[in-house]
Length: 373
Image (cartoon, rainbow, N blue to C red; front, top):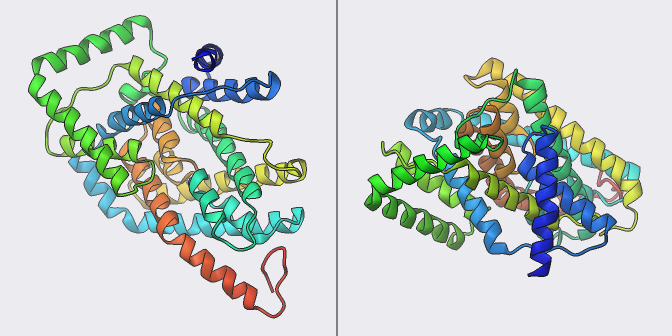
């Protein structure tokens, strides 16, 4: 309990500071930064229950699922080819960046490739254990740097570079509201529940069931994806599920920021000083590639640059979805693009990588650092 209390105090200070500095996603990035600095500088161990993290993910997922409509579902179905193009081109560009990183740092191409591909951090680390020649510590370090780079640069670019102003896109965007806004949102949610108690109970049971099904089916981020699907099915069917109070969204982002901070281990690699600059440059290059890709998509498809950028950025589905709500982008499309890439990387890329690495190893004159002839 002492560790949890210390975690709450440290991360609350980080959230307040980032809110005062008007940093985008202050209640996610503030606690994340506070955890990193406190554990590194004060050499203190912090803790956060996994159940609170899962509850936070479920709240964020439910809130984002409310943005799905019949129109957005039709729009998603028409953009499946562009999702495939975005995913494949991003992976190919990541492999090009990985080859350069491997040459400059003398790490194996297998490690650099798995560390550069924008999949989930935990999934890529697990995959590295199955690939001969891959170094788990290198993969974990590179994926961590990619995650940090995306989390801090993409929301900043979205708010200050692509948007004229930070648009509050629904409940999940109202995280910096005044006390009156928070109180009014709580009263509105309470009124919606009391006027339709049976519907609220059914909705709650369906959300809980969606989480259970997502876990059983081994979906990526099941506590986040399950509530998205449940809420979106209700909205597409024409019902109007109640929106969450902004206070709950703040708490959910806070919990997610703590979890992300505790999951990042920057000291897991001995030669991190040599690898760090190339990991940062590679991550920035992939973000820049996504920005260029979003400009092309916006000129060819009925999609804004903002939505395309958040959908193709090499970040996590949760982080990019939260950013989309903050800036008023099309949350349903952003989540769809991110989910498509994650599923493609989880179910297709491992087999392609294993086949490719075996083929390169059979080459009589391969470069051991890059896998090239």
